[in-house]
Image (cartoon, rainbow, N blue to C red; front, side):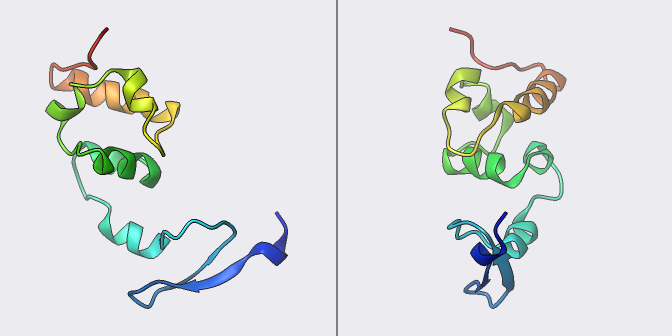
Length: 98
């Protein structure tokens, strides 16, 4: 990583942080808004935002999608699928099948 690309930024809430990309997300704000419990608390921020941005905040909503559909969401990666499958199974749910 080229240290010349690291920039100090300040979010609208006044948090200062360093970024090496164009991503506008403040890591401090993101940590503050992370759920304390529930299945969304198990996910990394990009995966959590991917679900939230698509209106998925409950497992019942998640079960209406296939794995392929979920993976198409910006920010969702394959590493999140095992966690999601596990929490769905614990509630007697699963991803939609074709």
